[in-house]
Figure 1 (cartoon, rainbow, N blue to C red):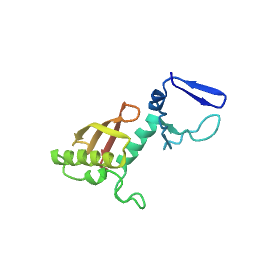
Figure 2: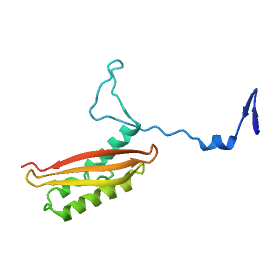
Figure 3: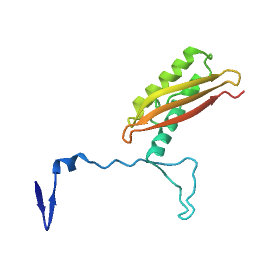
Figure 4: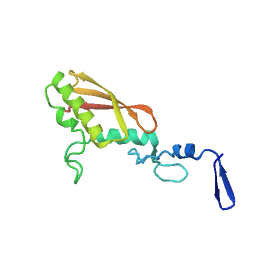
Amino acid sequence: MAGLYTGDKQIAGDLEQAKIVSKKKPHRDLDLSLKIHPIRKDIIPLKDDAAVKNAVRNLLISNFYERPFQSDLGANLRGLLFEPAGMLTNIQIRDSIRFCIEKYEPRVSVDSIDITDVVDENRYIIEVFFTIKEFSTQESVEIVLRRLR
């Protein structure tokens, strides 16, 4: 049995096994609904899965040139909203979402993207299913794109 002497404490056991176990990095993000904590009177932050899910959603609803000094950040989905409804536009939306997440959100991997084209109401319902790599949990984000006349 391998042991390590540190001061007046003895650590016994398999030290190689202890090196494998690591602490998961916590993720925090600002909740844009700005909910107030009832006791602390402070904004409640989003943590772990909810923070990553919020980050993916914010990334997808961002358009090009909306963020200073990061002109290509976002999926630019509203730019595709006024294209003719059809299979080619669905493919462009799917490719834009996949490229955006792969480039700017390394914490997740995209599993599938479902796009429902509601032509009568001039809108798209987009649901993105992804896996958070660090926690191995599956999440989804729903985005509704609609044209206003």
